[in-house]
Length: 317
Image (tube, rainbow, N blue to C red; front, side):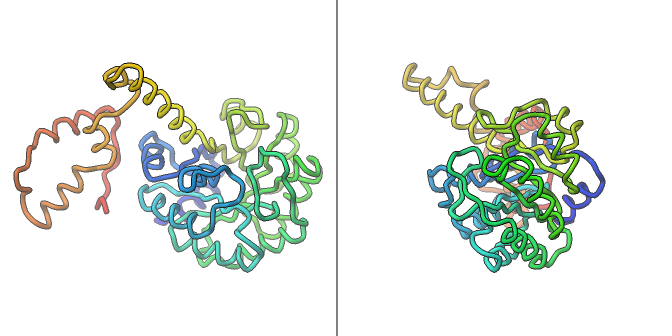
């Protein structure tokens, strides 16, 4: 079953969807192993990881699609992707949808900022006219070949034109076919409830440490009425702090012994996460027993697997 079909079935079931933002294959695999059944590729995190740039609209369609294709291939759960503004006008949006659909994504999110865009929690945001964004939403829906592929429309109007204008835009985008709506940067629970009450589509909300939106427990957000709660840049920001800590410990102590096992995984654990045993098994099936094979790694990987069980795939490739 394709990721788009999986995600569409969950969406139509009415079940709440807890998601985390990913930016590469390792973050996606870790999230899947942790039990997350839906993932969202963060455009800001990909921009940071691939380019080393902040989220100011410098990531291109080609760069984003290439990264998204690898991520979608690496897991069995559906993956949504942040497609910024669709990388241009309505024609560009149609190509964007086709590219991400071909890459195995479950759906795209496009937003109503001008290009180049920027993070919804930054200052200096400007918007395209609502009518222009509505055309882009219609074009995105028309472009998909698979009817299950999800088109999410995001509006950043809350911080520019106010909440009422943001709701008007959200409703307009829903009228033009958007399957889901994301109203960015809501300021408090009262605004959240107003959006849920007035926008006639399943709603997404992003949780971002240090952002403009408060962060109650996700169970509370589901209770309010949001269908998709996404922790957008959580994994990358956690990894950045972990890297800082690891490097500080190495410089201070001269060894890494103080980091294991609480702060870093060892080689066997990394190999288990990346399913090295399945690649060995595939090689042995294709070529026969491995030469000079030291089988002690199996015990180490089996021990790691017991700590974090994973689902076995038909093929690791």
